Amino acid sequence: MLTDFSSLAKDINIPTENLKKFVQDFELNIDSVINDKMQATPEFTKFVKEQKDFLSKYSSDLEKEKTPKDIAETISKPIEEVDDLINKEHKNLFDNGLYKASVSSYNIDRELGGDYQFVYDYFGKKTPLFQKDFIGYSDLYFYIIDMLEPFTDENQLNNWGIHRAAGIILYGPPGSGKIFWAKRIAKIIDYKFEEIRKSYLKTNFFNNEKSDFNDFLVSIMKQEKILLFLDDFDVIMEEKESQDGYAWELKETKNIIFHTIDKFEKEHILMIGAAKNVSDIDSEILAPGRFDVMIPIFPPNPQERAEMILYYMLQNLAEDATLLEVLKYNKADQLPFWRETAQKMKAFSNTMIIDFTQSLKKRIRNLYLKKEVTTLKIDQTILDAALKEAAGKLTQEYLNSIHLFLQEVSINSEEEFYPRILTLQQELQFYIRKEEPVRSIGFNKDENPENNS
Image 1 (tube, rainbow, N blue to C red):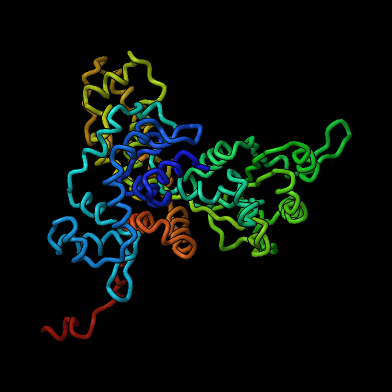
Image 2 (cartoon, helix red, strand yellow):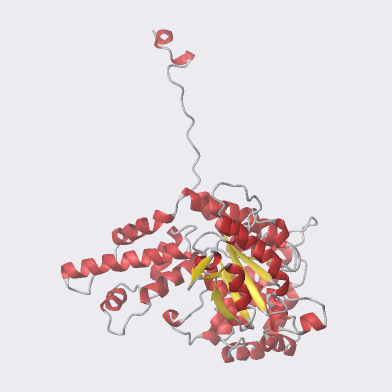
């Protein structure tokens, strides 16, 4: 539980959720706000205490139902600009024309170019991007924190009767970072991360002794505070078992999980299943007390893509690295250089971004071996070549998985992630092309040459 965070909010007399929303609205980096021990950073603590009047105004405004006219008056901006931005970026409209409390007038002002540099000045001394282990995703991070409160706050059970989940499903397109988030969850709740390898699901014989997945679970339940990560959860737990290729081992795994999951909470075991989608998963496993927590894992948005490119381009480089010299010559060691490329990576997964950086590094190295100078120009030709190579994984199957993911997350968590959903929908639309109508062979009646003679 973010006790420091909640205490800060209490000290300035605003709800904790409103302080979280402020971090998301103003796009503050999580590592500038919360440290590895789940405590508020000194910079953020100082900001909250010194800017309590501003945060109080923000919180009060956030909770009001308001019209575009109200927002325009609050921030002294033309109503046309406010209306246009809200229609594009925010959906929370009541039938009576008022906006829900989740729309902040101050965030609208910030997006319209309002000067809030005083906020960011508190976080001026930033950790270099390549030293971070967390980029963007503040909305998803806080969402996960809320889902994990039964693990981090005993009062959830004692005061509210809310039990810890026995299982959590992380669902999203391939390559979106589900294993990263599973490890992050293990870190948050202080559980040991243990990946269930495919070999564990099969019956094995060693020294004439038989062992299977049930034996593996029995050995795990002798330990405490273990997070089990199981990939391809949607395949293993699919409802229609009669499909071709549904292996006997998978059916057995499904049955074993059904029979042991009720023991997980008591034994301090949490299983996380990674799935591309949840619509085909057996509804019985989604019942309360089982895998009843579903968390969507999105591909990165444009800002996060730019940060990830820079992160992976700088990762593991020595201070005198040749590549670093080339990057500095092109100012490619700074975020603005990568924004245009990131915009072109519509709906790219985390894996595709890594592929792009690896391809680009190799191309820069090949160019360096030819010219043997570090004053190399990273031009659009070399960027586009690396981009084209990375886009090889942007298959129809992958785009279909994005489409299905958007349908599911819109049903399950639209209010919590509407900006992300909207951005991903728009990026997916980029790849949808209207097919030209196929013209039948021969002439139309009006086009018969005889009619024109």
